[in-house]
Length: 421
Image (cartoon, rainbow, N blue to C red; front, side, top):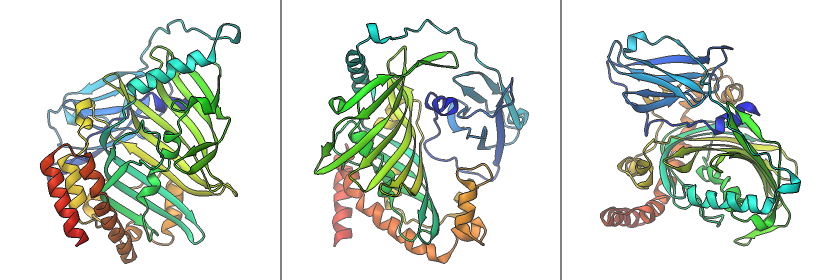
């Protein structure tokens, strides 16, 4: 649990789009560990000349493109450790050691039943949630999906940009829009970007939006790296009907910062009618006093058999400047919506799937007797890329609605009409 909660308080931020490799650049990889135990550090942020380029994975590893012997300032930072910087790329070691950042734990109020009103507590949390949670934003994303079917496993990886027009909305069909820029597949005939939004069933029926439907209680306060968190638990007490659909089960936990009353992480389980079950975790990053989602990991299951249908991981790349993600429609997003999606071997060579990667063994099983490169380049993937082209075109209506520019809306309207014709 420690590692999972820690992930929720880490600002997993990366650049708006992967760095282009020029001929003089090389791909550099290093591992970040803590000094006392040599344990890999997840979520350390790597900046080059104050621009965020990457963050470490579960194994403490990051990869960036650098110019050898350049005088770029490269820094590695983490909320729980002292930062370290290098003034020359030639001086960066392959193993970077961070020392723990020692902080004095402030006195934490421990609530007890005799002097604690859970309704007042939830009311305060709800107010902070509504005032600080980012509702509308647009950020780059990486989506990975491992699906399980009767004929075997399939793997989908998508890079693109997501539009979240109104996350505080309570309507289940107001889904985020995912515009795809790059993709690779193994044994996937028809990609389904819509499945990336299934966690929205939980967001639309969030216990801090519809508190009257839930019972709440507190578990023991948790102290993590010198910081205190309340653990607020909840469980659905009556069926929720949302746009003619109903939800019969929802329960989970939220980790609340004892100082700011803001969410850090939550885990959830929600049953959609008697058809599907969604279980997962959501992590948040504080930016300029607001909270924005930085990672979502969830599993889709069959409600009756509880069999896994798909595992999905969504990473959102959050810039440190809030204004950079409040502009919903960017030139990069428009370019992606207009491009033809094909397998770009040069692009994906920068992001190899290696041992220790997310569901590495399962992805190898999905590839079967083929190498990963052969599986990604298989001619039968052509259908999947065509389906993504169709999907991107269908998203232009959502882009048009999100755009604040009259000129952009006119251009998109013309494109939509021409494609329909």
